[in-house]
Length: 571
Image (cartoon, rainbow, N blue to C red; front, side):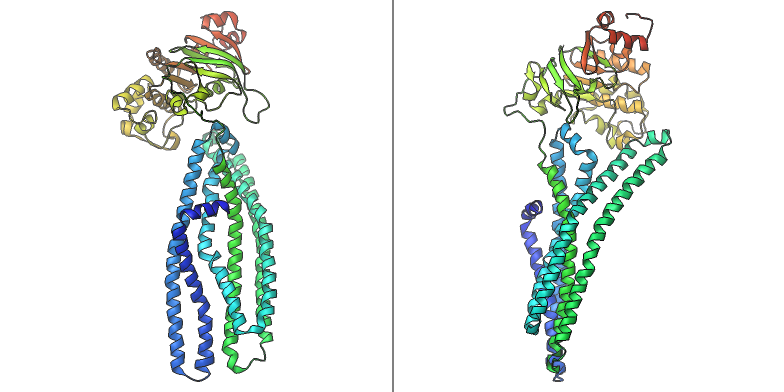
């Protein structure tokens, strides 16, 4: 509730205006039965047509006023709820952007998506219901009870008993429903996760003809969501009939107690029955609103978790702003992922000089990508420190640090838009000549020229209309557009044929004196011509030196060489 109130306060003026029109609408509804009783007891009883027309005209005026107020209330309520929903999504999205990779790993992307979409929608509907029902219903309920007591004072004990029973049912509804709707949101997360996993790996699924297995996973997650929803709604459904029954029981008691009323009080009795019916509808509205509130509170807790999440990596109090050249030093660096029982890197000592090209090789899972992810502070070291030009990366301004580093990952991530738009992710103000030069170095200029609109060719989400090799070359070109001081190539040529890869590496050689290059690859032929080669095994450094030095001293490197090239040669 605190979260909702916080956002309502931002728009308190329009919220109060909506509440004013809602109260006027409720007052109009409450006045109608009273004037109807006047028509019966004053007009019809005395056959006074003038009185009938007079009170009828007042009723029409009240109905018109209520209709105008309802229109205004709906307008302001919709505007406020939609604005609050937009602000919630924006605040969550901005906070997620601030979070480190450790936070994202813990929260899980599928869960974040569910919170930004479905959970915010639940809160948005709750805000709308406040201005449409949750204020109007209590006003009508309390007003109707007061007017019943004024019209027929003997009904006070009946009303007290009825309202006590109804209040207990409503409170039970909330207490039982709250945890169940929290489970519904978690099951929805699981369904989103299964769907996201399938869509991101749809080619693999089709290649292995695993559609049935994926359908079973989806069906299982969907059934669990349906079961959780059914459980929650079934529990809620038990209370509504009992609330309805209690109110109707009160109406029957009211009529039974009033069975000996004189004819002159028939109008009052009719008004009391109408007010009792209004109590019924208002209580049902309150019950429905509380059902919405239960879902919204469960969602608000999950939203608050994201808004309260603080980046695992802390910004330095007094950040350094060095002129980054590209000298990198690892000093006794160890690293473990959060929740992992085993260290991914152990006691890494390494010095990469400015302008060097260092190849990194090792078995799958040995820590190659983890090592380079520590340099731009995607994660922070668990032990030791990483120095760039003598400055601890944790003390360097993060924006400055990452602006000097470019990363071309193995899985090329492209965005919807043109080829030019994607390349300018590297640097927004890059000119045409710079884009062309980067594309030529990455051997992407040829297929760009053959594309329908060249650099203005539209790419689908993730670059679905490009081959794997084309996406990797564009990803590399994007990194080069940045003109970084440190270039991290994380196996970004794995989808290229040997000839194209050789051409790309030759292009990179021409810029090596200006850039420190970290080249991860599974192919020994790719790294063996680097200035130095780092060989990792099980998170530890097994060897560091030139190709010839490692062939003479590092058994792990020798084994990789012999498995890929063979012959026991040394270069």
